[in-house]
Image (cartoon, rainbow, N blue to C red; front, side, top):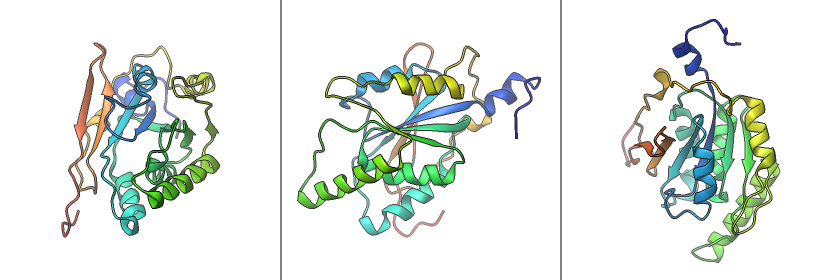
Length: 206
């Protein structure tokens, strides 16, 4: 349903269009940290920081689907930026859960794996991410050609001059997840705010 432009600023903010970055771990020390920080300087861009712990393969898809249902954002999610194929299962679950959500993929410069089996798994996820993505951006070790991405963020309204005032949806709900996930948002002073999702525990029902 279209949002009436005459409604209050707080109501409009709750339906503001957002973009989210799926990070492979903490932002600090991430190989594309500078690029991610550049996008996070946009008020309507948030980041999901995942733990590097890998859930069991036979539980992964179910866990990601559950996580996608439980995550709450301070607006309407319209674009997702994937930085590493390890996070593709969650990206796929989010795309399935949110209507009209676009997936943009920025492949890592190298795929580091614990062993050959893990490397084959990452290569398979990378291939699936490329096939599913709205667009795969050209990236080298030190730079990302993101002109098309920023143009799309403007078209969607993620980049716009209107002030961003998160509504009630910014009250993140805690959930039991297999890995710890932090949702990060930039502040006007350049610092970040984040809320950590509670790790999943065996035998605990939601």
